[in-house]
Image (tube, rainbow, N blue to C red; front, side):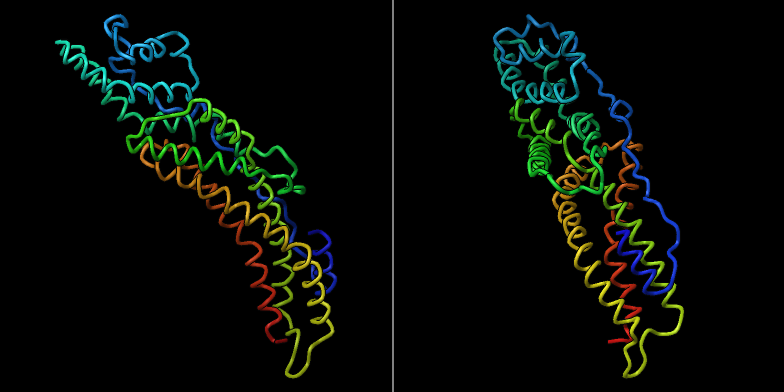
Length: 310
């Protein structure tokens, strides 16, 4: 990038404007994002009154001190377990002539189902693993070397699971879900943002060189290609197309791997996203759109300058 900019300035006899990488804003802390979930009457249920029901163990775990202090992902898994097991228990209680307890379980079931989007948000987008996904831990200059498909697979898995849960299919593999969250925590969303911002900063400076030169005399005239134009075409071909565009293509490819499952999950949970998350999300998306367009914007600037030479 620095070499290309220096050659552009020398060839076009123009100086770039000063520039610095666009700052990448970290998402809000997960503790600030957690949505409040009302316990309802489930906490007051008599554990012993649910004898003979598989959901008895679930209620016991949920009401224990460990259950109350569990991580958001574990609380979600307990909610899913309750939603999966409660209907059989409710039917059994009614058959045994315990309508009051059945009604209490039914009310808890209805509440848990209504709260499920918020519970999924707390365990995913609002959890520590997704926040870590957006924090850069590697230098942008070496990115996207050594990125892993495990991250994109985990993102796709969580988005797919969330869609099924919201559709009323409450089966969950607890271990697989926690492993997927661990893979997401090691993801490279932050590195992608940082690298795109770095690329945008350099190419914006290169754009300023090209546009300043475009305000002067045309590079070429009728039937005449100037020496400056020939040198510029060589510089662009060798250093921009030959060296920078392959990196740009790698960044674009990684963006199109990471973005779809994240967008899918954010769309699924749109109705419960807290204002602080939505604000950060909109800012992130604006920045990604701007930085992703940097190579295309630079090509357009070059084409405008070289148009008289075609």
